[in-house]
Image 1 (cartoon, helix red, strand yellow):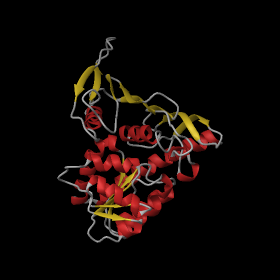
Image 2 (tube, one colour):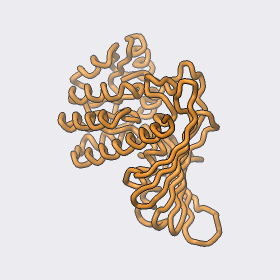
Image 3 (cartoon, one colour):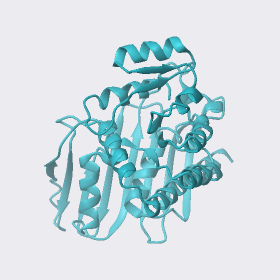
Length: 319
C-alpha cells in the first residue's frame, strides 16, 4: 500500500521468498502503481488503497504510508479481513494504537508493527545473551540512531502534518530497543531537544528510568553522520551491536565482554546477514499461520509503551 522508497526496499528484499509474495500494489495514481508493478513483476496494480483492500485474493497488506495515515488504513485493512504489517511508528496516539489492535483481534487478523532490526540475527542473539544472563543483571542501556536529512522541503520526515520529527522516525528505534531489553515502560523521563523553525524536533537526548532501576539513555538526530548502535551494561559484562535494519558481512555481528577485569577487548560473534525486511516479512507470515491472540496482546502492550514513551518525550521537549 504505497510506492514510497521504503515500499521499494521491502519489495526488493522479499524477492524469492518461499513464505511471502507481493501480488498487488496500490498508489494514489494508476500510473505510479503500474510503473512499480512493471519494475517488480507484480501481477496487479490499483489506483486507490481501498481497491487493494477490496481484492479478495490478498491475505495481507504491508502499510508504509506516512505516519499520520497509519491508523486509518490499518483499521480499514482489519475490517477488510487482511492481516497487516504496518511500518513504525504504528500510530501517533495511544488511543489509536489500542483501537488498531482491538480491530485486528475483533476481525481475527494479525497486526504487527514493522521494526526490521528486531528480526535480524544480531538483535535476536543480543537479546538471547542478555536473557541467559551472559552479562549479569542489566543496569544501563545506551541506544543511538542518527543521520542527515536532505531535501527538507520535500522530505516527509520534516512535515509536521504527516507525523514528522526525529522522535517519530529515528527515535522510535532506540525507544523500541530499550523496551525490548527492559520489558517495561519507563516511569521517569528527562529529555532535551532541538526544534526547527516549525517547532519540529530534529535532535533529542533523553534519560529513562525504570521500576527495575535500570537506566537508559537514547539519542536521535537528523543532522549527524550516520550512526546506529546499542550498548548494554550488566553486572558481569557488556554487550553491543549496530541493531541495523539491513546487515552486511562487515556489520552482522555482536560484541561482548564478560568478566570484571579492566581489559576492554570485546569478543566479536558473527551472525547471518541480510535484509531485515526479508526476515521481518517471513516472521510476519509465520505469525499469521500460527495466529495467537495472547501474543497479539503482548505486541499491543509493547506498541502502547513505545508510543506512550515517544509522546512523553515530545511533551517534555516542547513544553
